[in-house]
Image (cartoon, rainbow, N blue to C red):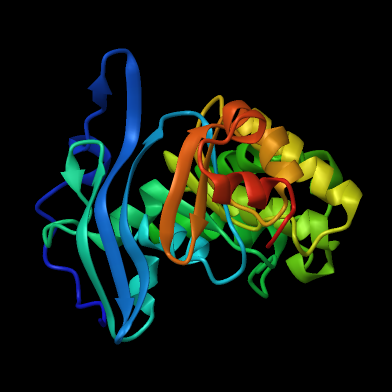
Length: 275
């Protein structure tokens, strides 16, 4: 379904989303019986699980299993596709993100997205990182410089580009471009970072840098990563969800998922028997 123009915001995503607790485990998302259709084609079927705060959650499964669709549903970017219909709920802390009073601009600032292929804007390195803050009303040049420097430092890119900030972002290497895109995401101070196969287009050295960065970022952010690379999921994630044919087959701590899967289909997939 097409996105309608946002109504005047009634729920302040930044201030009103409050942490949801179950015992001493804090959650950022509770997904309950989520189903999704593209027209008559059902892509997700009754998905239910919780995503923990300040941990890395990996979404694994073969091509076409619904991984990326699920990821883009967490900040409703899936609605950029036409003829999308959903049922069920995704509670971000204590508010259902499908509530009509939730402002999509605010939601997508709080829940940022990094895509499979680096997609820097055809602008300078500085303007790429400053783009989001400017959209959100930051005009003070000193503040913008501080945000750009801080964001680039967080992704380990500052020392590599600090003397090139006015050059085109397209002049950077693929790995640098991907880190720049992560910095652009961080510049609007999200709480959650969604990553859709963030290293699949990169060489091994650049991939290792992104993996190391993910491990560092989880100290401050909740991260959900879609990956085809099971070794990568095992290295970087705390929890793993295995999707197959639009269904959630198994969800567990990553070490348990890979050492002692409970479902035979999971065992077959992580052992390389299909996928």
